[in-house]
Image 1 (spheres, helix red, strand yellow):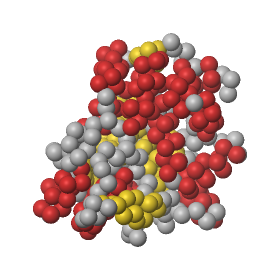
Image 2 (cartoon, one colour):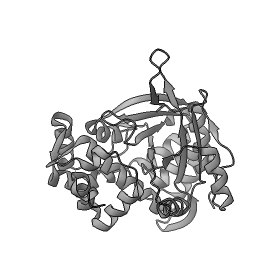
Image 3 (cartoon, helix red, strand yellow):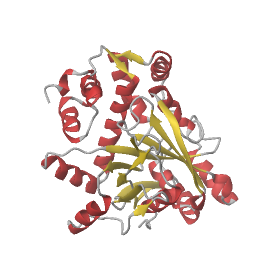
Image 4 (cartoon, one colour):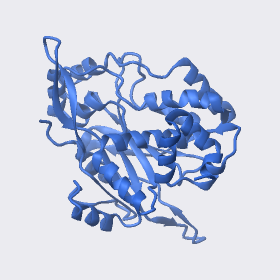
Length: 345
């Protein structure tokens, strides 16, 4: 840990989260040595991307008890988690208050940190589109983002009206100062440590719910047509799930099931056979809803979950060289999305 503390990544994360939380994250997560050892004094876009992922991963564990238990088990064995990707949901509709429509609200954060579009995935059964973004400098080592957009125009007029009522008061969390830092990352590739420390929690705050508590009637109208939009109504742009990259997802699923953890019944296998995914079932959380008289009412709804993925290598037929298959699969994704489709109580 002493060597971990000497780099600018530790200074960045501890500057936001404090030394104790930073040390816990460094013990828990597998981080490329070049990112750990980068000396600074400036923060590169890759280090900023890693720091952002670490804060969002920590937030996910705080909201999914089964994931936190799993992480503690791994750390107790002296193992580290390989954060493969985080998934977020957006709504492709204009009129969301101060927030840009759809994925634009998040891509404006990711692209200056070196993220590039890595694949587009139709999620037609859900009336959504998914897109993966990989970090150009360390594509296999810094977690990807899987950003999905829901298309309200594919639903009923009543549904579309409810979407606008729920999201129309959205606030833009991205401050002018944070935008300036992103502009500097885009133009120069690095910024001063103090500026990065100030901007990082603002960037992390973009991955949250930006609108007010939804009206209960609107939530019910959304849930009747789309479990995914109902989830966005209560959780917004928070991590829908984070993902541990493991060598054998089938064996891990059996192990976790034997421990009594809320594991998905099946493993999703991509058409290529190279990508396998499963997950813990979504944590159930208490969320507030507005009633017609203006009062708030709490009920239990699906929150976020934790996923496991095994990625087999792609082999170049000419050279025999191997690289990790960083792709996704539309069928897999739609199967995994069912984790948040359980009935609210």
